[in-house]
Image: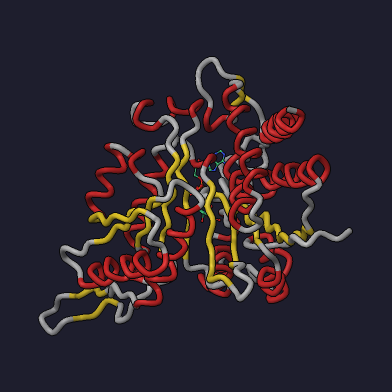
Length: 371
Ligand code: NAD
């Protein structure tokens, strides 16, 4: 029987296809062991699409992305395509997906698995068991605001200009994503801005408060200045559940939070659009890391960030929370057993390949399912 859950897999370049191969094994396992099946299509993006079609994303692939429940992307880019014109670089494929799918909310969880607390630059008791979610506004703010540019002044100086600008609807829709997520987690949202020095920050604070009071009164909300939020993230990160913030502050805060947990090879992400009439939002899931050309083709990349991105798809697009828990538990158990890819290797642990990590996670899924 055809599945009613559709997934478009875009492995991309470099280690993308290697790590995505391990995700396919988890997808297949869910079908066989749990009867949870997906209609999976695979296509090209980035350098791979440039080589085959001359563009980083064809219209046909874009149409497919718009038609499925979720897109799962590996990574794009590499030295082979570095000298191409900006308009057809591999990254343009990614930008087009984000733009045409209108993905305005970027979700970056920072989860510190107990087995990896030693890999963090912070003390184990500060990060052990950490599980926070940063929701970053992705399509507005100072990265896109007009006017922008560099101009020559009559006195011979130059002036660089960018504009921080947000509207009511842009703030409210990303706030709704954050409150909605908090409802599926610990029920707490912290909104970060600079209302003390920026009018756009005052508006941000007022509109987030409005969404809370009118639509999510049962979620706990507090407001924090973004600089204090950065400080609190490295002082006592476990105080947070969901942090919602704008494009610029989110760029910085999510990178800082990411490093609380150790390696790039562990970090998943999701980008969501507005829900349609049926309540379903367009969504793309991808690891935070890039195509890692320095290790591509060696079979040593860590597939956990990409497998965790698929777990996010299970939870947020397909409403399969217990299956997502199962996948995350399998990852936790494999790490606890001492198996490590090179990027998270520690003394006394067993170093394994990309493929072996996939095998270990599937074996752990088998054990968990048999309980
Ligand atoms: P990168 O994330 O690809 O790699 C940074 C470092 O982390 C490298 O040493 C790499 O080996 C290591 N690393 C990354 N992922 C890993 C994994 N899963 N397992 C083990 N080690 C891992 O960043 P970069 O080197 O700055 O960029 C390389 C290419 O990727 C560039 O072409 C860049 O434009 C592109 N890029 C793409 C994306 C994306 O597709 N979303 C994001 C960032 C960079």
